[in-house]
Length: 129
Length: 129
DNA sequence: AATCAAATCAGTAACAGTTACTATTTTTAT
DNA sequence: ATAAAAATAGTAACTGTTACTGATTTGATT
Image 1 (cartoon, rainbow over the protein chains, first blue to last red):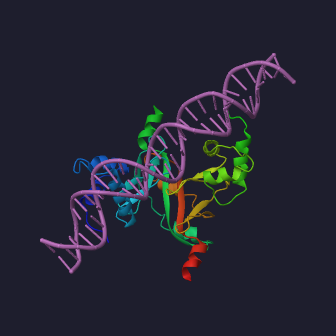
Image 2: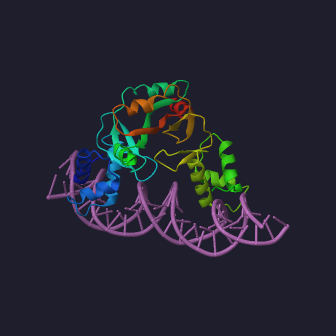
Image 3: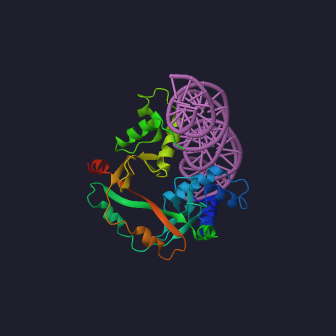
């Protein structure tokens, strides 16, 4: 049974108010204003719990720490190979790819993780100069 | 300049001979027959190098260690949520998704990482009983 | 074949990100 | 109000990976 906690609510609120996919460390530092002695362990525990019950999204890119997203509407993520920032990406017409993947597969496809990479607008412009 | 090394060749050969996407640890143990004092650091260094020059593929799933694939023909990966095994998945008709993702995006999409998850054939059957 | 600089190695220590442990505090059903 | 369950802060420990060091291997040049 999950009991209410003010720390968890603050973590959720923090994430919902941001669009930059913060790391656990960033959440920890951001929450410290309100909870000066919050523990990093508490942040990790609650991020994992929130992700498990589907209230936030966990994004693992394979290098560097995991990132978290408080916005649940269907969207994809883009990670810049230059600066490492993660941004949202609206991609239309990808709803069918689980079905495509399931063709000729004997198991059961439940979903997919996808992120795109390349140069973000800022890094792309910077390169031109 | 990259010089030949017997260890690196053995690592590559090991990966090409397998289809189960082993971890660095598994490679290390598998190579130990031939190189009893090979160092785990050497395995990591060469896996990173081989991935960088495009001779193998590195697969990060976000939980557990990275996995490596010695097979370069275009294919996707499936990770079983139950047993954690990673297998290959042939998915047709996904060539265009970088283009789709680039529509309405000011940066430059260079590629994407995707893996599918769900229940592998074995775990799916096991559940029924 | 001998020389030698650069690359690689084995071994080990250090690191980053994350999880686990413990004693205390908070939540919430009764 | 009470009390059991859940959550907490603080800290230690863990996992996967990278960095450092002095010795060895490679390969181009003689």
